[in-house]
Amino acid sequence: MLDILAGTPLLTVFLVVALGTALGAIPFGPLRFGAAGALFVGLALGALDPRLGEGLALAQSIGLTLFVYTIGVAAGPSFFRDLRRQAPLMGGATVLVVVFGLLAVVAGTALDLGPGITGGLFSGSLTATPAMAAASDALGGSTDPAVGYAISYPIAVVVTLLVLSRVARTDLPARRDPAPLSAAGLLTLTVDVTRPRPIADIPGIAFLPGEPAGVRVSYLLRDGAVTVADPDDALRTGDRVLLVGVPDAVRTAADALGTAAPIDLADDHSVVTYRRFVLSDHAVAGATVADLRIPARFGGVITRVRRGDRDLLAQHDMTLQLGDRIRVVFPRERLGDLRRMFGDSERRVTEVDFLPFGLGIAIGVAVGLVAIPLGGGASLALGSAAGPLVVGLVLGRLGRTGPLVWTMPLAANLTIRQFGLMFFLATVGLASGQAFGSTAFTATGLAVALSSVVLLLVVLALFALLGRLAGLSTARTAGAMAGFIGQPVLLGHVTSIVDDDRAESGYSALFALAVVVKIVVVQGVVAL
Image (cartoon, rainbow, N blue to C red; front, top):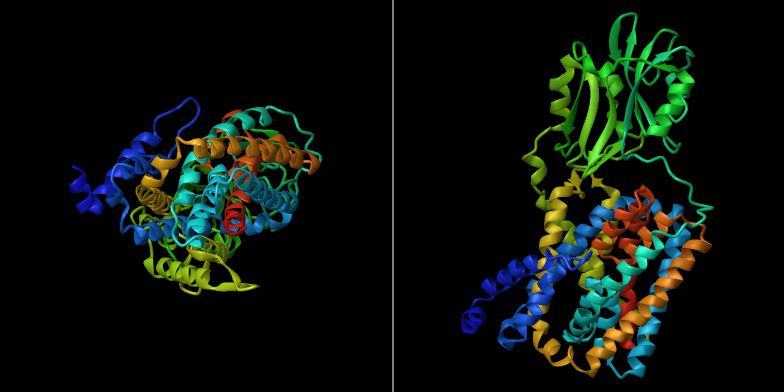
């Protein structure tokens, strides 16, 4: 059997992917290993025969590049948007990654672990797969980082889960982190207008870019006729309108306008109706809600956008992405026009435009090759891990350049990302199995495990202190801690305890930043 697997690498890799997926789905209490299951299966199988890990370098690089580039493209918009708003948190987290790197070097030197194992200890304790790859590249393809990574990775997830269980139940003061207007759980309410005013003057109206907004006006009943509310219109006494938005904002707007009506205007589809359109036209992707000029062109209004599993209130300056489900209130006769504009094709949003996709990855790989001299003959390069990630962040922020749309539908992005990660971890496991088998259950393996526990407890305690000193909420601190470590199961654990959008915001702010910083820092860790 081993001869067959050694002679058919393609069979071996996909067998590891399949078995790793099965292992990753098994719950160990609140913990599931997810994609890391492929690493552990690969390590176990690779330990049986060294031939199984030979000749997989190109497959490793392809898997890693797909993984980090798709992360960058998806995270680009939120990453740059959050730079100013969450600068203290992001700056503090960057310092803590450096601190962790220094502690890892001290532990590795004291315990004589060697640079490769120490780099793996750093990467695994922060669940940073790209950092582990960067460490291996910096050491000329050594398998030692994968060994240290495999030992410390499960420990990191378990320890962080336990710490998060405590942090998420701690009441932090949140002096500088008030509860935001949440787009989750949108409310609709029909209101009879007794206090007339322009729509633009309704408290919390989603109209002007850069202003806090939590409500939109969609339907308008005036003089017995139902129309779509024009954002430039002024409401009159006796009008009846339908408000949609964040529950608290909708109630505030309703109180400012009049009283709740006993009917729902959205039930009347005779003249005005609503529908979700799938954005599949590349010519529209990258435009903002305001750019589409829906009220002027079609007599309609965009009220909400469903992206992934979340309903978002349509803001004036919200950038629309391929795969968005856009809810529009419009006159019935404009259905065909709106379908043509948005594309409204489920099939097309499952497709990837490989021209910008391939070009973006090529640019990322090229950027990763650029070496920055540090003096004394030393140099620093982003490599195949950070190069595509950084370029993906920039291109994701740009959205499009002329006819090239850099972003991709979320479903396609997640599929490619998961495939790349599984493929990378499977091949790394196979290549590192022999080294892992000879190290994991020795004094060195025990030293790595204990070091991971101690260093994590120290840095996570410092992170909790950072959240308190920065005046952050419990939700944002716990979510940011999950993003700092970078394992999605940690965010799921936080959101199961704290139902607050600030948790996801904190996670997204730190996830991509932490990956970049870890990749840079680990190269210093293995060089010291």
